Length: 257
Image (cartoon, rainbow, N blue to C red; front, top):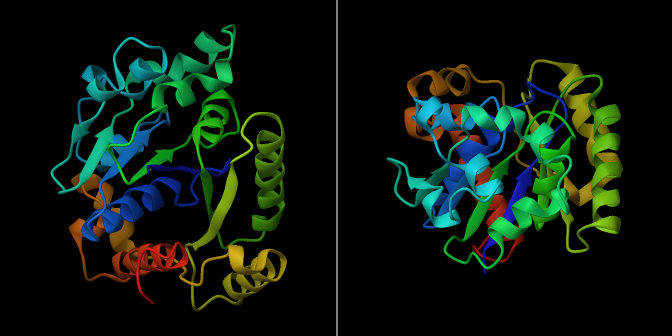
């Protein structure tokens, strides 16, 4: 059974796309068949997987509005077991285009219905809580929230949790918070430790033990069209995402501790 995971944070620059790509790649190295859906008009996940000509891309937008079939909207990447549904330039106007449609919040759900080809589908959402993100939340089974270790982290997190509860109540009763990933963690900063402690105090086991450090190689990798896990397998950031993938699978009972 395919599990659909929406990677969500309404704030930009928190490592959302970095988390999507590296976690998806880590899962693929563990033998899972993975699809990444780039649902962010900025198309960073598309670029980060080496797809450079987004003007010619046919992917998430075209599948969303029904121009092409789901199976024609994705392609295999250079990484074994990892597939990409790219974002095209047209995705930037999608929210305006679909706002007047019936069941506008269920378009992606209908697109993904009955898809069992993949073990996991990761949806890289825009840095907002608009119609595209709503579509992702309605289609998803679980939500993964990358949370930067900074002063305003808990304030933004409360808004995300409220949105998840409202979507669960009104549109998607199966939706659950899978977990919080602490990103850009700086061991030298007392603020990072304080934020981590606060988030763990409020959300307990929902916060993954593995945190993602600030790491230059994570930032460099997208410019080479590769996830860091491929660009520099041994760097601290890559190893953290590999450990996170294992932790997730252990929690789900799909990998021995």
